[in-house]
Image 1: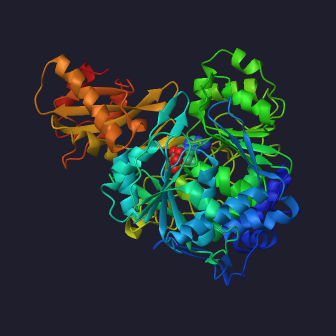
Image 2 (image 1 turned 90 degrees about the horizontal axis):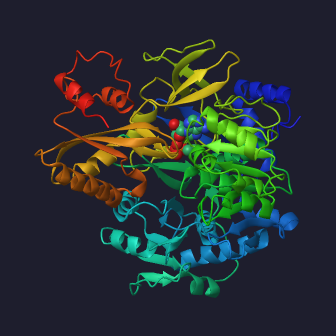
Image 3 (image 1 turned 90 degrees about the vertical axis):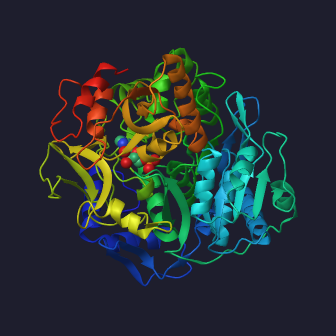
Length: 635
Ligand code: WTA
C-alpha cells in the first residue's frame, strides 16, 4: 500500500489512522519517496501552538522549482506543463513543455538576479493570468526571493499597502490585462501605487495588451528584451525547508491585510500530496483550475501542486461569460480536460443560463469536478453534478484556507462517497475538532461547533509577515492549543463535515474573503460619513453580498443620498477594488452598540437577512431604540 496515492475507502481509513497515530513517520515517508532534497532533515516536526512555533523538515535543504521543473526534465521534458488558453478564443492556445518552462524560469531568474534581487528579497507580482505570471513565481522560488502576488483586481491603494507591508523591492506587472471585452490598464495602477512605495527600485513589465504605458527611466523595464538577453542556465539557491517561499495577503478583522507566510518544504509536500489524491491525477490527464494565481487556490493548485506532480495544468486568462456563457465548456472540449476545479459562485452564475450553452460541447473527458471558496449550496451542487458531471464525475467539495496552504477536508474521488454540501472527511494528517464557546471539545456526531485543527500539518502558514503576535492572536488564542479556522461546522451521523460559514467578521463574497473593517475604514473616509458597519446577506450568485449601514453627518434629501451611495462605492473601489463594492447601503441615525461601544453585528446581520422575528437579546444594547428605526427602513 502506498500512502501517497489512496485508491479505496479502506485504504483511506488505514492511511488516515497511520497519519494521526504517527504523523512524523507518515510525512517523513512521503517526503522521502516523492521529492528531491539536497539535504535530509534533522527533525520532521517541532511545534508549539502556544507561541506558535511550527517547523517541518527542519534542517532539510531543497529548491521547490527544482522539484517542479528540473527533476521532470529527463522523463517528461517534452510533456506539456502549462496550457495557456487566452482571453480571446480567436487567439491560439499555447502549450508550454517542461523543457520550455524550465528554460524560461531560468532566464527569468537571471533577470531578477541582474536587477539586484537576492535571496530573501520580496518581489511583488501584479499580473494577468498569462504564462509570464507562472514563470515569475517559479523564478522567484528558484533564486530564493519571496514572492508576494497581489490579485490584479486590487486598487492602487490596496496594492501599495501590500507592497509596503512586506518591503518589496521590485514589482512585476504587465502593460495591461484582458478581461472579457474589457482591457485593464495594470501599469497605470502600478504607477499610481508606486507614488507611495519608495522601496520599489525596479518594475518589470510584460507585454500583453500593447496598451500605451509610461515607462519611468531607470525604474521600469520591458521584460522580454531582458529575457532574450539572459543566460539560460540559472543556478538555484538551496533553501532551508523553513525559509519563506511566499507571502499572500488575506483580509482580516482589522484594516491591515494579513501577509500569510508559507515556507517551502512542508508547503511543497502537502500541496503535491493533496493534489495527487484529491484530483486522482494520472499521467496523461489535463487538469484545469479556473482560479486566478492571485489567490491561494492558484498558488497551490494551478502551480505548485500540479507541477510538483509533473502534471499538465491549464491556465485560463479570461472570464466564464466571454464571448458567451459556453466558454468553459468549449475549453473543456477543446483541451479534453479531465479534472475541473472551480468555485460555487461561478457554478451559480452558469446555472442561471440556458442549457444550450453546455449541450453544444462534448464534456465526456471530465472525470473529477471540484469546488472551493465557500459552501456550495444544494441546488448548485446538483446542477453541477447533473449537467457537467452527468452524474458520473464525483464532486470534490474542498474546504481550506489561505492560511492552511492546502486542502484540508475533502472527499477523495472514487473513494469517499460524496454528499451534497459536505466537504466530508479530513485528509490524512488533518485532525479537525469542533469546540464550543468555552473551548471544550464537542464529541459525537450530529453536532455543531467552531472548527479548529488540533495538530499541525506541513503547509500551515508559519506567521503573518512582520506581525507574529497578530498571527498568535488571530489563530491560536481563541482556543488553547488549537488552530482556529474562523469557520463554524457541522459533523453528521457518519462523521462528515459540512462547513457552515464564517463565525468572525470575514464575509465570503463570490468566494473572496472580505474583512468588514477595511471596507468600513474606506467608507468612513467619505467626508459626509460618521460611522458605518458592514454585514453580509444572501445573494443568488455571489453567495453573500455586502450590506452597509451608514450614519451620515447630516440627513439630507434622497438625491443627495443617491450621490453619497455612489461615492461610497467609488471610495471602496479606490481603496480596495471593485470586488468589495456594497450591493445595499442603508442610511441610519445610529448603529446598535453594546455598552462598551462595540457594534452588535449580529443584529444588523439579522436585519439584512430579513430575520426580524427573532432578534435575540437586545437588552444589553446601549441604544435599543435604533433597532426599530433600522428595521423600518430595511432594504
Ligand atoms: C471558505 C480559499 C465552505 C471558508 C481556499 C474558509 C469554504 C474561507 C470552502 C477561506 C468550502 C473555502 N466550503 N467554505 N469548500 N472553501 N471556504 O482564504 O469560510 O480565500 O475559511 O481560501 O473560505 O478562504 P480563502
